[in-house]
Each structure stands twice: as structure tokens, then as C-alpha cells.
Image 1 (cartoon, rainbow, N blue to C red):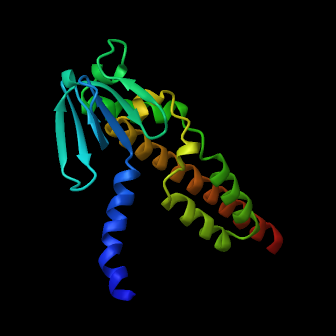
Image 2 (cartoon, one colour):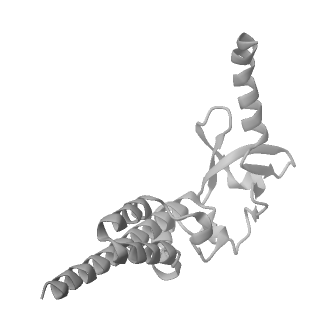
Length: 190
């Protein structure tokens, strides 16, 4: 039985990975490709196949639309599609800029750190370290445009800046609580 498991486990995993594909490229000839979209550029779409993980590209003129695994569909050649107007570096910088304006999902982590740190700054280090080290959850990101968020460069910039903001707010609140505790200790000794 163990030998069968060793033989069939890789096969089962590869079938599961194939069937659980993240995205679908629907070509103009109506054929479909199960892939993971990596980047949408001005003239091509970069993707990885599910079997090899190698990044490949296809000309955008061959693609009708992209069906993402969350149900969102992106018509590739629409003129109003924001993705086709930006280069990868511009999308990355746009993600950083948008995070500075829209991301406010740090409030729970920052407030929790403040409350625990007011009780004990030493114990407050635990949530401060944990919260500042973790990337914000997607549901807390509050990104302004789901079309843009599907682009890997935009997403990288947005998430990186959101994590930086979250970390800064968490440590600022820990510092405030530490300062309050120091002042209380000084006042109690007088």
C-alpha cells in the first residue's frame, strides 16, 4: 500500500494542480489555456504553465479575455483597460502610491499592539513583532481597482507599501505605549 501511495501521490498532486488552475486564457480561436497570469504588458501576456512553472508569453492579439480564478474577466484588448496603458515599473509605482492613499487595514494590528503594550511593553513586543512581520491579508488591503490589482507588478508595489505602512503604525503604537509606561513609572516613584 505504501509503494502505491509513493507511486500515485505525485500523479494525484499534479492532477490536482492542473484542475485547480488559477487563471484561464481564452484565445480568439476559442481554445482555453489553464495558466497562472504573471504580468500583462503592452503587447504580450506573461504566464506560467501549471506543469513547469516556466514563464512564457503570448501576443495579446491572440487572446480574447482572461478569466481569473475569482470569477473576474478581463477583456484583453479593451481600450479602457488600465492595464494596457502602463509599463511594469509604472504599475509598481502606482501600487505604492495607491497604498499610501487607500490602505488603512493596519488599524486592528496597530490598536491591538497599543492596548497590549499599555498593559505591558514587554508583552506588547509579541504582537508588535508578529504584526509587523506579516503581510496584510488581501481582505484588508482596500485596493481601489480590482483590474489593476490583478497585475503582478501593481500588486507587488501595493502590498509592499501596505506592509511598510502597517509595520510603521504598529511600532509607533508600541513606542507610544512604552513612553506612557515610562512616564507612569517615573510618576509613581516620586
